[in-house]
Length: 158
Image (cartoon, rainbow, N blue to C red; front, top):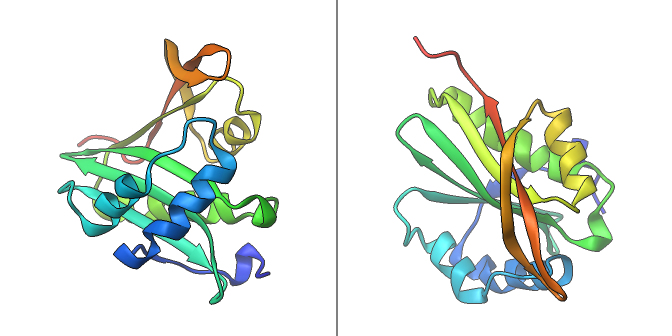
């Protein structure tokens, strides 16, 4: 397994969709379908982009994001359980944020499950601030869970 300092993020490909869906099945209580990953990798949503990190044998994680005008949104980010704790989530998110800054993007938005403490720590570490709460947003085995809305200013508006 590669440490994050040696890993590189690359653009996702259509052929990656099954592996992305498999990771998602292992980490998410309400996973995306393989078709959703296929659509994202194929660019069926005009501004959606996918980055993956792999160790040349298997994909270890991914991030899916989109850009609209001067804002970006993180739609999904996950690291395979066997690769967690090695900084790959931070590598993926940092890579996306650097690309967005280089493109002149003003702000990045995301939402996360209230219960996802690991994600909350990562987002805070990278400078994201909580902006609000979306009540009963995510499905759970026993009902619904709130989403925390977060944002990060990437560039001051001119």
